[in-house]
Structures are given as structure tokens and as C-alpha cells.
Image (cartoon, rainbow, N blue to C red):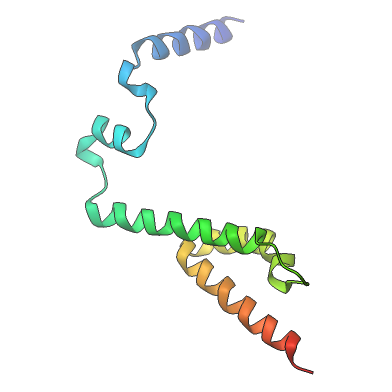
Length: 109
């Protein structure tokens, strides 16, 4: 019981001492609060690129198709595994190539 009380009081103390500006959790606001460790411009651009690649991956999964899409069948679980190993843009390229190859195989007699 005492440990729980101490943890609760510690959490309350932390929350009340948290800066008012910490309500904004956008990267810009966080980088401003921690200016000495923020990413350089090149790293920020790379992160933005990978963010767009994540959107591309999502698009591959949910785009409407008239017929069977072999990549959409396994991209959900395969993508998580690949994202643990590679940057998002690399995974997007892999998935796009896989889809093209599998779709071309499907079209061949």
C-alpha cells in the first residue's frame, strides 16, 4: 500500500511539474523543448520520406481491386516483420516489386 501511495504521489508530482508547453506532442514542439538533441534537417527530411512510404504501404493494403491481389493477402503480417528489419521506404519498394511480379505471374497462362 505504501509503495502504491508513493508511486501515485510521484506521478502527481511529475505531472504538476511538467511544463505547460508539453501539451503539444508534435515533433516541432518536442524538438523545441529538447533543442540540444533534435534531429538535423537531413534526418527530419528522411523521416518525412519514410512517413510517406508508410502511407504507400497502407495504400497497397487497402486499395480497391476488381480481382484477387496476391500481395494484399499477405502484406499485413509480412509488412510488420519487414519493418522490424528495414526502413519503411525499403519495405515499400519490396512490396511494390513483389506485387508487380506476382500480378505478372498471375496474368501468364
